[in-house]
Image 1 (cartoon, rainbow, N blue to C red):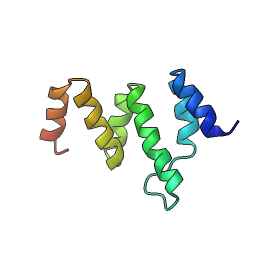
Image 2: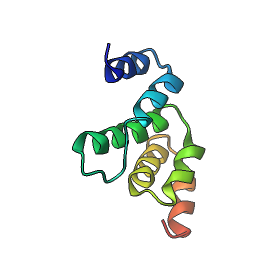
Image 3: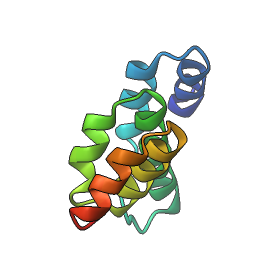
Image 4: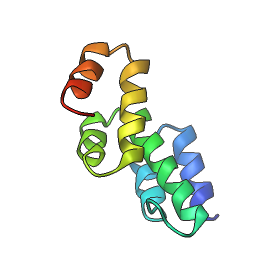
Length: 91
């Protein structure tokens, strides 16, 4: 079984730690390899779905994809106050 098949299986079972570990090892923001970049986006999505908002928040300081996924996640969770605070702080 390939790593991405293992990651998809872990994702389906909501084994976030395993899925995140597998995907992050094959992810790179703004990579010239489109698969690495897609894996980076998948990684950010997994972090949000695993409710690792503190990790997304930390990454959002330097990663536009993490920032976008964090803001979307806050909005989806009805956390408008947190989203508004982020906007007021310059995000």
